[in-house]
Length: 109
Image (cartoon, rainbow, N blue to C red; front, side, top):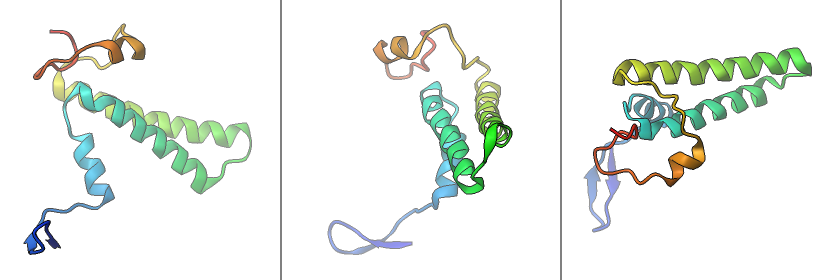
């Protein structure tokens, strides 16, 4: 697609719609992308809930389960691609305090 560049000229530019961008993010085999993938799964569960407007415990539990299944699928895909577990003994505070080096995949190795 041609888009106007900073210099005012129309230049060919790669573009993607929302679904394509999300699929690109899902395909990133890095632990650094995992928090974003989990956030996407949470957003998916929320969106399902808003669209379906569950009433009562049973319907709400179903929406929560579907969101969890989305998160689980993302985790399993990442683990299969990297050959490393996503879940660790570190909590979010520990992960946030770690200084990652370039090329570090977040597992400390």
